[in-house]
Image (cartoon, rainbow, N blue to C red; front, side, top):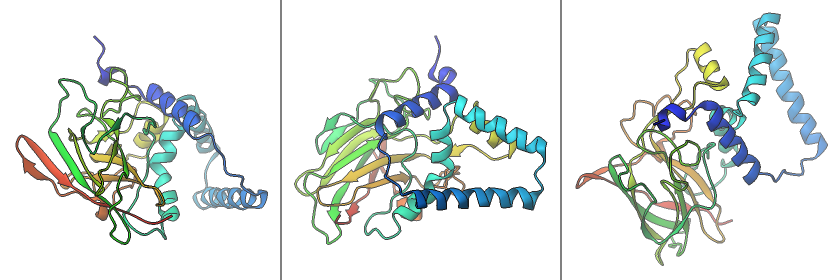
Amino acid sequence: MTTTEESATAAATGASATERFRADKTAVADTPPERVSKLAREVLAAVHATIRANQVSYAEYDALKAWLIQVGADGEWPLFLDVFLENVVEEVASADREGSKGTIEGPFYAPGAPELPAEATLPMRADEPGTPLTFHGQVRSADGTPLAGARVDIWHCDDAGYYAQFAPGLPEWNLRGVITADDQGGFRIHTIQPSPYQIPTDGATGALIRAANWHAWRPAHLHLKVSAPGHQLVTTQLYFPGDPHNEDDIASAVKPELMLDPKPAGNGIDVEYDFVLAPS
């Protein structure tokens, strides 16, 4: 039998991420030509400056062209851009926002997860491996008002580091759900602790990582989109202390404010984290 680990290739994962992006994010901002011109010229000027400063050779230029072509062939542009650029876009976009800190969405979000009540267990296999995790908290407005009916959209990888819909052999909505908070903005989610994982490395992104002698690891984390009417949505990730890659996350997405404080609870762990949303 083929295992998830054997068949979750970069090409397959990249194709899934590309297909998902095209399906879910087709809206394009009506950007004025002068803005397009300014951004394109400044990006190209930065590339030109790098070529001149480092005396890039034709052999190196051809290697770059071949690599860029392969990124597209592997369907890895969502992976590459989300890992290496999204953290700065998120930083700029949220610089003036009150409330809870956000971070990158990443390439593995899937809208339309099952709707669940304020206390719920995420969909999972009957024999789902991993440490039981209870995650609970409250969603409040910036003035402290509890946000009744707030939505907590949560997704994370399994104990082997794989995401449902982006690796074969996993149920469609494994470890994904949208929780509706109670009348005090409270929620309690039962799931399993996610694992640290390497981003796919057998494709073009992995080739760059190996050539540069970087590592490909992301620390264990929970993904969340938290929203409520009249408030700004927060997209974020929450991390676990002690993970060796909290300090050198390949995606540069870890922030001190996003660190959890796990407590032992029976045969698992309990974590509490409150969200504060800014009025829109």
